[in-house]
Structures are given as C-alpha cells and as structure tokens.
Amino acid sequence: MKRALVVDDSQFMRTVIGEALEERGYEVVTASDGEGAIEAVERERPDVITMDVAMPGIDGIEATERIMQIRPTPILMLSAHTGDGADATLDALENGAVDFITKPGGTEVSVDTPTLTERIHAKIDAVAAADPSSLSVVDHDDGDGSPARPAVSSVTHQDGDLSTVIIGASTGGPKVVERIVRDLPTGIDARVLIVQHMPASFTDRFADRLDTLSAYDVFEAGDRSEVAPGEAAVASGGIDLAVTGDVRGRLQLETVRETRDGTPIHPSIDVTMRTAASTVDGPLVGVVLTGMGDDGVEGLAAVQDAGGYTIAQNEETSPVFGIPGQAIETGCVDDVRPDHEIVDGILDGLRQEVEING
Image (cartoon, rainbow, N blue to C red; front, side, top):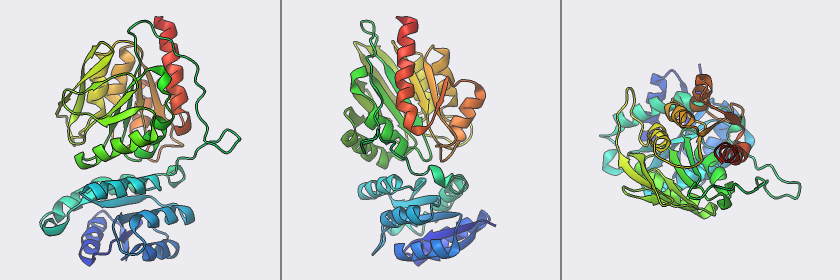
C-alpha cells in the first residue's frame, strides 16, 4: 500500500484530506507544520505528499525545497484561492512540487469539502506516479558557471512570414515553461502562445512571473487580444484561447469555451493549436510538455497536418509522461527533446520550415 503524508496546520483539513486519500487506497500519516513534514519524510518515507502552502514557522514553500534536497518526493500543493496564494504556489512549483489544487477557505471550508475531495482524487495518483528525478529542471552550464543558452543563428523569414510558437503543458509544466520562455531568443520575431493548465486566479500571476524572466513581453490573453512579434500570451484559466486571424504580423485572439467528452479542461491546448494551425501564416511550431491526459495530442496533429513542426518533451525529463507520450504514440511528433533542449528544437524547427517554404 502506498503511503501519503498530509501536511496542514488545520486538524480539520488534515482529516478531510486524509479521508480522501484513504478512499483512494493510501495509508495516511500527518504533520501539522513544515518542520514536522521534513522529519516525517525521513521517518515515514512517503510515496506522495500533500502540502499546505501557508503554515506558521517553516511554510510549505521552504518545506518543499528542503524535502526535495534530502529525499525527493512527489508533492501536491494545496493553495488558497488568492493572489498571494498563487504567488506562493508558483514558488513551491519552482522548488520542486509537481502540481497544486486550490482549497476552500473561511466560510467555504465546511460546505466545499466534497469539491476538495474530488480535486484530490483527480490529481493524487498522477502526482504520486511522477518521477522525482525529473522534478527539478537543471541548468546545463556552458563551462563558465552560467546557464547554457541556445546558440542563435538567424532565422530569416520571407516578408510578412513571421514565426508562431505554441507551448502546451499540464502537470509539472510551469517550471519547464519558465525555462523555455526565459531562453527563447527574441531575435526570431516569434509570436508565442502558452497554454498551461491552471485555474483563472493563477494564470495572470504566471504571466507576470514569465514576464520578469523573459525578454518577451508576456501577458495574460483576454478576448480580442493581439500578439505581435516579441510578445507572448498566456491563455487564461477557465476559458479556451482561439486564434482567429493573422493580420499585419499580429495574431488575433478570442476567448471561447469548447466542450469535449470526459473531464473538461480549460484552457485547452487542443483548441489553441487547432485554431492556430488553420489560421496563422508563416512558420509554426507546436510543443507539448509534461502532463497527464491527452489534451494537446489532437492539436499537435493539426499543427503537423498544416505543415508545422512538432516537438514533445522526452520521458526522462517529464515528471508525468501522459500528454507527450500519447502524442509520440500517435506519430504526430517530429522531434523528441529533453527539457533543456526544447528551445534548440524550436529553433531547428523554424529553420527547417523556412528552408522548405523559402
């Protein structure tokens, strides 16, 4: 039987989360703060951890960082549904957590526990199956102690033929997306679209975080947004992002809500990639990263069918190999790369398309 460690300073929440995990067949041990969590990891050696973000003393962010140093373990963060909670959760993901869910607060706690239980059931098995060795993205240096950057040779376009890059990710994706956007050179004049599975209250903070890391101007997309060369738009949580036009070098975007069989996923990678494939001019590259499920597989196939170049993250560096693995199985992937070579793959793909279409 797999063992789960529940870390929360609320006895009530420890009980609710523990019961949800027991329903999924986990043996449950608990800790009431970050210090207790670190001690329990060494003593109990859990297979998966649920970690509250905000706790007195050693909080969930610091506890996550220290656990990943002493005994890397898949961690599911539980975050308050607030702006501060979003920032703290993104810090925890940066420190090695696999994924997160929001938890009720205040007067919502007692009435919304069934929803919390459903969220835990939907996430916990995939998080527990994540590969701890791939949870931290390692910067491969150039020999001088600085992070390696992709070699940039010019990607010369025909007049009006601007590049479009679409990046889709789910579980385990934020840290890889951060690295790609940080390292992607602005000299390629790309319009970049990012679809990361996140709730609505988190995607704006994620966009702000990417903006501080990147030379691209990064923003959360809204209805009727436009994306120019050197800009990157993050799909808003809870709604899908469609590409409706490519006019005077700018991508025209609209927010839509598509339904699909099974559990609805919004924003949908498929919607953004499929609409881009039927709309954009010039070189197009689609990338799918770590994540559970199959959202993005249909979209990547559409990009390939439209003559675009497609890339999937490899299994060794994917905490969860669901989306990229299924895409590879369908045959719609042109290139498979580890996380630190995705940007090189994007540049190679753009060069190939320019050579073919030039």
